[in-house]
Amino acid sequence: MAPAARLFQKKRGAVIDRIRKLLEEKKMNQRELANKAGMRDSVVSRILEGQTNLTLKTIARIEHALGASLINVP
Image 1 (tube, rainbow, N blue to C red):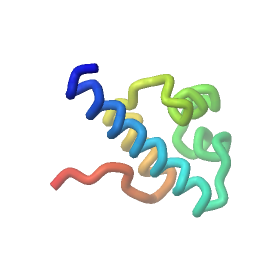
Image 2 (spheres, rainbow, N blue to C red):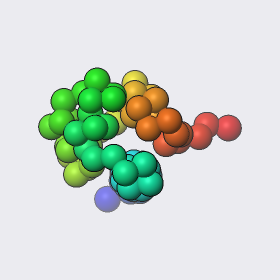
Image 3 (cartoon, rainbow, N blue to C red):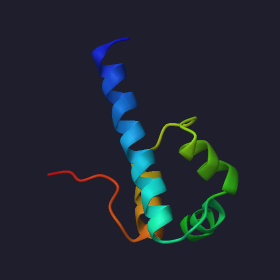
Image 4 (cartoon, helix red, strand yellow):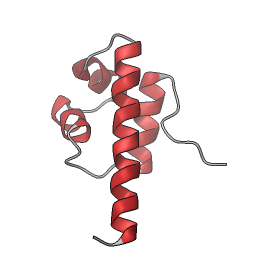
């Protein structure tokens, strides 16, 4: 696997882990996140299963719904 592909998988995994941690901390489930982010439940499920690529727009919607940052750009 190419270095860029490994880096992508690592970063995607870190974002997914952060979403899961925030859901747990906020005592929210996937359906609640989907509703707050204006997404379908199935989309959130695919995100958390690592089956879809996250766009910056999707990340921003999830950040807004969770009230927390998922990624930081210096």
